[in-house]
Image 1: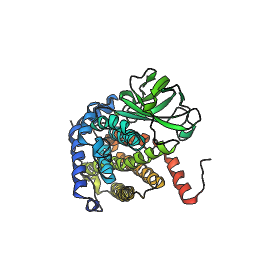
Image 2 (image 1 turned 60 degrees about the vertical axis):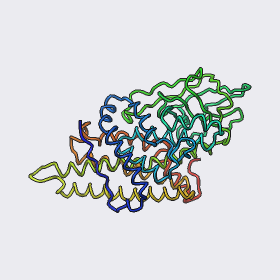
Image 3 (image 1 turned 90 degrees about the vertical axis):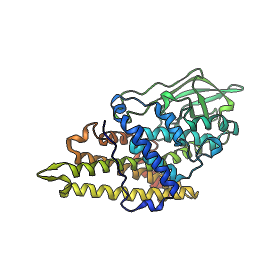
Image 4 (image 1 turned 135 degrees about the vertical axis):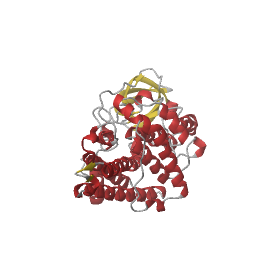
Length: 392
C-alpha cells in the first residue's frame, strides 16, 4: 500500500492569510484523508465502489454543513473553513469531496435556508452527523444547462402532492436517505420538495459504466406518482432562485476542491521528477520538466489567491454568483491542465493506479462539467461584464 507523502504547496505563503482555527481545521481534514481515504481510494476507483463507511466518518469530522449553525448540527464555521475542507477532501478524491459538497451545499443548505423550523429540526442533525445521506435533484435527462426547462412536476392532491418525473447524474442517489428535488407545480412554478427513501414510486437506479468519479455513487431519481406530504415542501422559496443559490454555494466548494486535486498532482510530479533518473540525472534538472513544474505552481498560487478572495467576499455577504462562477471555472481549468502536465512528467507510470494523477484527471472531466459546464460559466462572466445575455 502506497504511503501518502503529500506536502501542501504554499509558494506565496498564503498560510499567513489564515487564522489558527483555519490551520487546525485544514490539518484535521488533511490527516483524515491521509489515514482513511488515501489507503483505500485507488482500490475503490478501480472497482467502481463507493466506500460507504466514509459517510459516518465525515459526519464525525464535521465536513457536512460546516457553515450551518451549531443548533442544527452544523459547525457554525466560516466559508474559508468550508473551502479548506473541500480542498483537502478533493486532494484525496473528487468523489469524496462531491459527497460532502452535495450533503452540505445542496441538501442541508436549502433545508436550512428555505425550510420550516420543523424541517430543520427533523433533517439537519441527522444529515450533519452522517446518519442520513442526502442528494439534490435538479438535472434531468433533457435539461442540464437549462434547468428551468425541467419537466418533473407535482400536482395538488389534498394533504399531499403527486410527484412525477426523473432526474439524472445525481451524486449520492443510490444510497441517499432523502432527496431535495426541484419540480414545477401546476402553474409551472419551481418548488423544492424533500422526498424520502421508502416513499412508494420513488426509486434511485445506479449509473454504471462511468470512467470518471468511479469511487462516487451516481444514479437517477425516478418519481412515479410519488405521494409527498405537503409538509415536505420547502415553504420559503419559489422559482429558480432556490436551486441556483444552492449551486452558488456548491460551486464555491468546487473552486477550492479542484485546486486540491491540482495540488496533489503537482506534489506527485515534483517528487517523482526529483527521484526519477534519466541520462544520469534527475529529470527535475531538465528544462522542459522545470517549465511544467514552474507553470503548475504559478497557476496553483493564482487560484489559491482567487479562492481566498472569493471566500472573504462570501463571508462578508458581498460575493456575486458570477464571481463564484469565475472561481469554479478557473479552478477546474487549472486543475485539468496541471493533471495532464503531471501525467507527462510521470511518463508511463502516470497512467497506473500506483499514482493518483490519472484518477484525478478522469475525475476532473466530471468536475469541469457538473454544476455548470466550463462554457456556461464563461458565459455567466460574459453576461456579468457586458450586461448582455448570450443564453437566449
